[in-house]
Figure 1 (tube, rainbow, N blue to C red):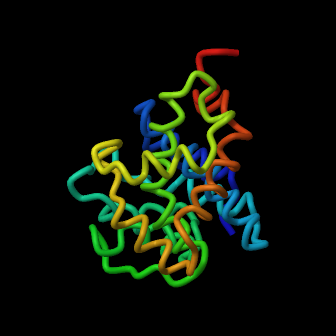
Figure 2: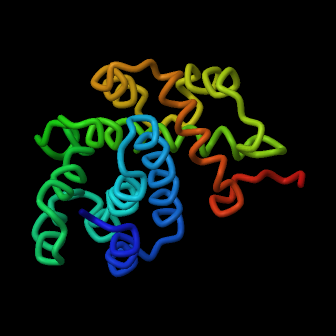
Length: 188
C-alpha cells in the first residue's frame, strides 16, 4: 500500500510547479475526506491524491501515458497505479474507475478546482464556505470554466452520490487545511 510520505517523495521528483503541487494537495485532502466517508484508509487515499498527476508537468499532452512504468519501477503497487490511471478515464485512458477510491479520484480531481476557485473569492476563504454558495458557482458554467462539470457529475453517478454530498465532504476535508492550501481568506 502506497504511504503518504513515499507519494510526496515520488511526486516531488517529478513535479516542481507550485500550482501543480497545490492541486495535488487539494486532491489529497479531498481524497482523505472521501476515504473517511467510506471507512477506508485516509492516508492511503491521500497518497493516491498526491501522486495522481505524476507525469502531467513533463507530459501535459500525453497525461498518464508516462505514469505506469516509472511508478511500478519505483515499487508502487499495481492496484495503486491503476487507481491513478483511472482518473483519466474517457479523457486520456481507458481504465474505468471501479473501486470507491478510483471513482472518488475521478470525481474530486475536477471538483477541487471549483472548490478552490470558489474559496479564493471569499474574504474568509474556505473557512465559512457553505454548500449553498458552492452549488451556485457549480451551476454557473462560466465560473471555473476549465473544470469539467460533466466529469464531476459522471463521477458522482458512479459513486451513487449527489454532487452536493461529494462537494460537502471535500469542502470539509479541505477546510481542515485551509492555511496550507492558501484558502484561509484575506480576513483573519
